[in-house]
Length: 144
Image 1: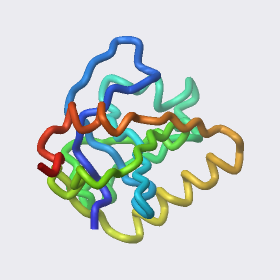
Image 2: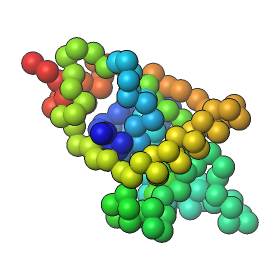
Image 3: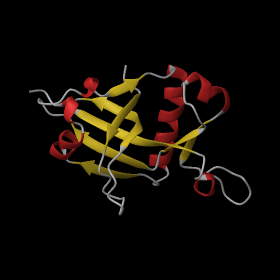
Image 4: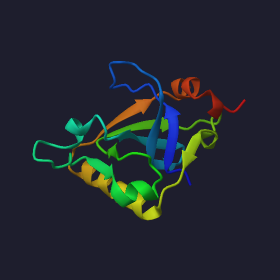
């Protein structure tokens, strides 16, 4: 099962245009659709993750403490549940060729619940990623 996928995406909402390998939580992988959520380390982004009172951003799922260990993350991390990146899987791509791993089912369910809660609250934005662009940045997933 692919729960975390490592791939390169040109984020439509990133003005820097950087394209680097990045970890993503797979929110949906069915019927030819892949929906990804960015996973980032908390270190250096504390100002985004926590408010002045130390409360976490309500649209982020934090992977800290024991969950960090269970997910085999090296550092405390967060998933931005307010932004997803949707990709249509085509016949000429195999996502399983990219770096990926599973995480415990209980944690997957908690993350999916946070995503649902964020969508239900109207705080969710979905961006579309071009399949051709995705393949060009992740050439090893291309089926020849």
